[in-house]
Length: 175
Image 1 (cartoon, rainbow, N blue to C red):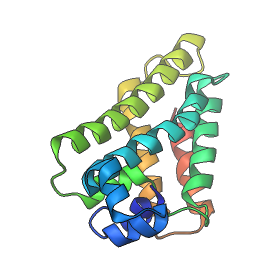
Image 2: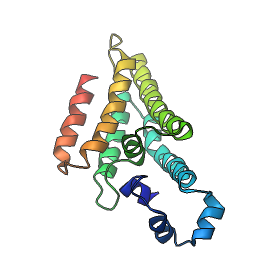
Image 3: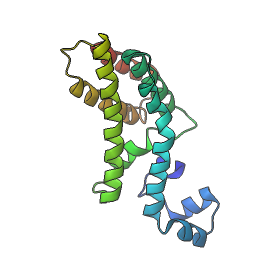
Image 4: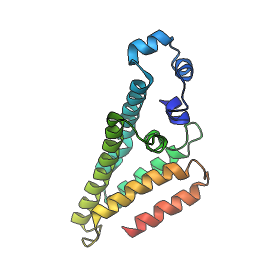
């Protein structure tokens, strides 16, 4: 997963994968069939480990607190020097001009799941009076999804966390 995340699908070679996984070529092909199948498995694994961050939205004590906690963790991860920059899923969609249907669906599902989590939390915020009921929470959930993925892209070139936190705080103030 980390090799694909760091290099992208196209730039990752079979020897890169063999070295990272400490497998023989035959073991790789027996287990995963081909590079694309392994890539899809890596993205599915990434989605599973990212679910903990999305649970911050589901289990949030309030809309703004949950969104802030989510983005605090997201920014920390996106700027972590021990991890590849950005996000595997964001990198996947940027790196593939025409992903195959299974990969496109996997990525699209990830986008929709996160946007839905934002929407549900904003809806709860409207029910409790924390979020103005006149606000278009569908548009706001889409904005938060885009903030999420823009942080992934920005963190690849700007290492100043203050800029990213300022961006997050501005969006949260809009809620």
